[in-house]
Length: 94
Picture 1 (cartoon, helix red, strand yellow):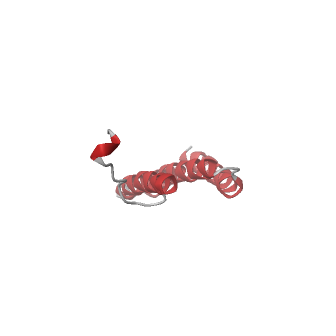
Picture 2 (cartoon, rainbow, N blue to C red; picture 1 turned 90 degrees about the vertical axis):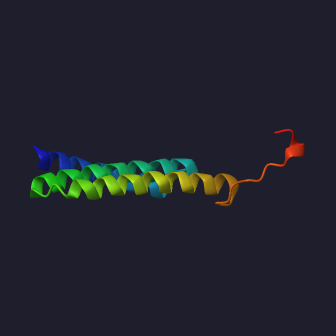
Picture 3 (cartoon, helix red, strand yellow; picture 1 turned 120 degrees about the vertical axis):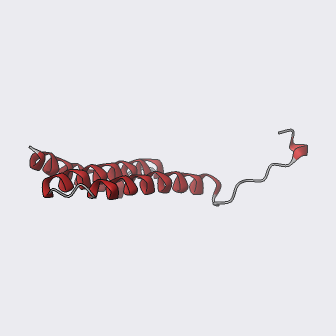
């Protein structure tokens, strides 16, 4: 049962790779890469279960956190073209 789930996840990963490479816009590509990271987390968990290695779940959780932070950083970079916090002056009324 888990082997079939792993095979389904591998197929989903391949389809997401195609979407990430051929996406029409930047945001489609970022969403595909984020979904790809999520599928890889599930795949790591399923393979860890198949091999009887529960410590792989720790690796999967760490990878999920890295995936989340990276997605936010990429979107922030492409919005502001910098990783720095934009400065707001008091005379701007904000």
